[in-house]
Structures are given as C-alpha cells and as structure tokens.
Length: 485
Ligand SMILES: Cc1ncc(COP(=O)(O)O)c(C=O)c1O
Image 1 (cartoon, protein in one colour):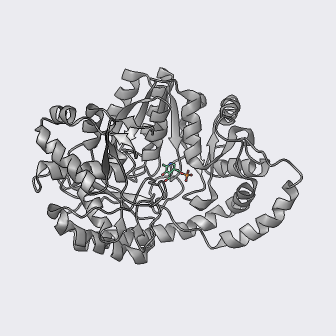
Image 2 (cartoon, protein in one colour; image 1 turned 60 degrees about the horizontal axis):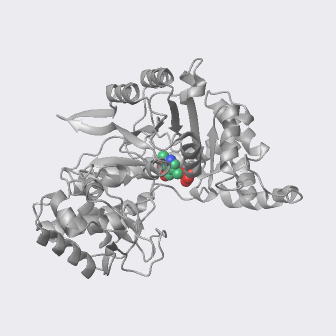
Image 3 (cartoon, rainbow, N blue to C red; image 1 turned 30 degrees about the horizontal axis):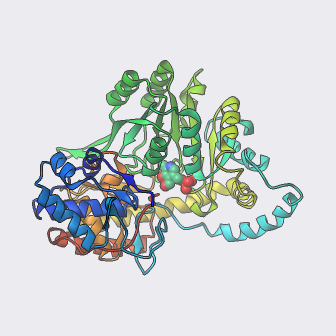
C-alpha cells in the first residue's frame, strides 16, 4: 500500500483556525481533519502525524490528539495500520472522485449552470458534421481550425484581435492550467495567486512544484462600506519582491469573490509583470458571465501595449455554455502555443473531435446563449440575496455584478462546521478554507448564484437548519467531495 505522510507542520497549516469555543479540542480537531478528508485536501491513505508530533506542534496534550484520532477511527475516517500509523479513510463505498450529489442532495459545490436549450439540437447537427472528419485519424493536439477560428473571432468581438494560430484548444480550462504549469514552471518557482482563489488551479500549480505567493482579493465590508477587489499594493509588491515565473489571476468575475480588476490595475499589472519577467496567466473562465457590470473591460492583453508576450489567456466554454463539453483553450503567442502543444503530448493526444465540432457550432450564437445565462444569473442572484437577507440578516452578502458566486461573510469562523452540518440537511456546499491555501477563510462561504433560482430556498433552508446545530457537531456524513468548480 502506498501512503503519503502529512507532516505535523503542514497539517497545522491546513487546519487553519480549527479551535472552536463550543466543543472540546479533540472534537474540533477531529472534525477539521474530517473536513480536510472530505474536501480532498488530505487524500485517502494519508499518514497522519504521530500523536506526539502533532501534539507538540499544536501545543496540545498527547491525550487530546489520541482522542481526536480515536474519534476519526470511530467515524470511519481513519484506520490504524501496524507499522504505518494512522491513515485517513472515507467511510463509504462511494467511489472516490465522484463528487456527485446523488440521493437528492443539492450540490452547491459546483457553481455552474445546466446546458442551454439549443445544445441538444446542435449536438444532433454536429453528429452529421462529424462525418466529414471521420476520414482523418481524429488525433488533434492543437484544435480544429473551425473551432480555433470561432474562438479567435470571439476575442475580436471582445476587442482583442486574435489569429487562430494563437489558440490551442484544451480539454477544459483545467487542462489549460495544468499544461501551462507543466510547461512554464520549474520546481521551486514562485507563482503569485489570489486568495481566495479557484482551488484546482493552486493544486495544479503546486503539483508542478510552484511555491505560491498569495495576494488578497476582498469582497468585504468595513464600517458598513464595501471594500472591493484586489489589494493592489500587495499585488505590486508580491511581483516586485519575488519576481515570480507566473501570476495566475482571474481579472473578470474572480472565482469565488466575483470581483473584476479595474482598468488602471490591469495596465499596472502588465507593466510590473513585464518588468520582472513574469508571465500573467489570466483565467477568463467566468469572464463572459456579465449580469450588469457598469464598466466595459477588455481582455488583459488589450492593455498590454508592446508587452503582449507577458500575458497568456485561458478561456472555457464550461461556464458560458456547458461544463459537459469539456472544451477550453489557451490564447498566447504562436511560439508559446507551439511550446505548449509539444508538452501536451505527454498529457494527452488531443481534444475530442465531436465536442469541438459542437462548440464551433455554438460559439457564433454565444450572445444569445449569454442573454439567457444573464437572466438566470440575475434570478439566482436575486434569490440568494433575498433568501439570505431573510434568514441570516447578520451575514454580509456583497453585491456581485456577474460571475458564479457571492463570497459571503458569515460573521464567525465556522464555515467548515457549517459545511459539514449542511450535508446532514441535504446540501453539499464548499467551506471557505477550500479557496485558500493556508486554512484561512473560516468566516466565508461561497454561495453560488449560478444556480436554479427555484432551488435556492431549499439550500438556504438547509443552511438555516444546520446553523443552530454547529455547537453540537454534526454526525459524520459519508458523502465524498473532491471537486469544486
Ligand atoms: C476560474 C476557473 N478556472 C477553471 C475552471 C475549470 O473549468 P473547466 O470546466 O473548463 O475545466 C473553473 C471551473 O469552475 C473555474 O472556475
């Protein structure tokens, strides 16, 4: 059996603010480790630190850690294996990595919409069109010309002239992130990221050996005034101080805060990054989900002047159209595209043809699809805002003018407990710390607005039922959860 150890120090970082005044330390510790396992931050078969080491690190008695481990074992979240110590487990036969919300659970871990109505008819037409491709081998590492043209055309419509040769089609934006990380990072390189950020991005960057440097993005209130967006001086300082290889950022409708970068910050970012030799990777996955943003903002390279080479864009059909297409792309200079395509062969041998044909059929009608998405998001947002105001008047729900979610300040450091308790009331939702790299964000909950407005009441009911139970600690729930989108 192969096990991965987690050092006491690392576990301490992952645990974040785990202590709760409402429960004994052993219970709080066990609960927090359980959430790390459920969230996929501690994989199954992780060897937990020796009791003595963890006790020393957390300044607890060894008995407390032993009691926490015992509680994990009793709940099925750990086993003791002779010679291997205490290993994490999931107490269920649910296959790993199937983060499905079966059994009538409402899944708020995915901030994404169902497919647009037009997709079924276009899929049938795409099946006919596929015939024209069947004479070839079907291996397509860069993307079908027809799709690359459609993507390039969309950039031009958004104010960024683009040549199809500057596009590489990938299997979703996720693969684009992995590919960029593998191609451009050497172990130990620094990468600037936002916190909170999209978790599977920092996982991909870490897997490529990145040392992450985080810069805060806020969606908060201070003295009743909204404090919005990037900590611009911190971003500037992080890039100047660490000369990172990459800066992975989401300039439009940042996931999870929903913020967008101002024009001056876009211009400044490109300048500073170019000065330090840093490549800015702008993930635009949520960028087309505008509801009523007052400013017209162009894609980042449009502000680059002569420094275009320092920006790579990632795009995706997943949020604008449908996640099931698994179509994403990278926009970069031709030389960079060739470099990425060469590395890609070590990951996979191309993007499926049918989905590319289908996406190429859908993109010309994207404005119509987005009009429908906008009204769904608007309804989702209205439902979330009004339901939360009615049930949780003490929570601070920042206004978002687009994107997938609201980053809600729940007023107390109990996000993990709330997420655990909500499962017992039929709601899967991701706790705030999943969006940070050091266990922070216990006071925040990402509440998707990219949801069916009719279901919001059920979700808020579940949160309201869970909220008063936090002090009592919920029973373990075997539902495994790894993916957050
Ligand atoms: C910011 C961001 N990047 C990338 C992804 C992954 O997108 P895809 O489904 O295209 O792989 C997501 C999904 O939620 C996302 O929010």
